[in-house]
Image (cartoon, rainbow, N blue to C red; front, side, top):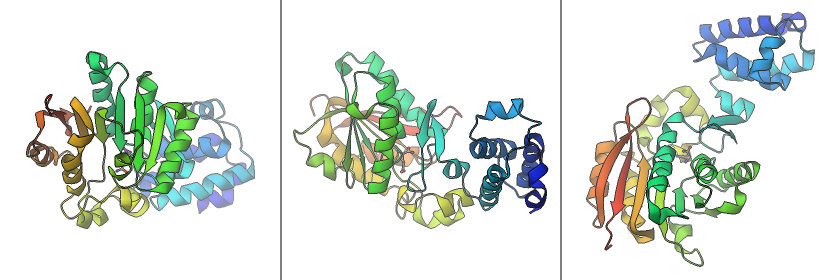
Length: 301
Ligand code: GLN
């Protein structure tokens, strides 16, 4: 690589310029932002600090670390996995290839629950369950913004759950989040004492299994398959959640699930077919796409 031979004498400004052009040529999205995030990480500074150090020449070992990441990024490793962090709901989360990278789309579910909590008097100290917590982004953003809430976060992947616990500890929220390991409601069913929830939220795996290979290589080749595959039609988890959620919700409790933009109607039909749910609604994300489906458990249920 060109950057390899000349790097010793290259300034921060030149490194950014070269790498941005290299990423653009290689068809990598957000070329400039990627270059800045990787270089800031390699130099151990913030992105903003790069701009005050434009003329500086970083030491060769930092340039070598940067060059390594640039190669991996060219091979479509997501920036978040290279720098080990991602941002969600204005919070920083540690991420590894064991967890899905938090997406801005998923902030919709968080916003919706916060809004509900503020307007529902019965949610004075709400119990909230996050199924398939992954990095813990939903549960942690909720705990952070709802100081009286008690969260329960579950995941079938032990590695993901460790990541979520680490993130909760970083944000000093571990005391208000229970982490339970297992397949959807399985670990919830054995909680002692048993808990009923004011809200159950989930961004479950929802990609049609056969379509994973067609996704962008960042996702298809690098994100955990376990966090992506929603079975043959992508809807397997919604059916299972629909069947069991009622049992764990308080009367009037709310279930909110994230879906792909083209799955909301199917998921709404699945939830409406379940006895005991009412008031189903589709919620759009900040980009205007249908993103979440919400239902309420009937008060007498
Ligand atoms: N709940 C996590 C997220 O929203 C993980 C979702 C998943 O693994 N499908 O990022």
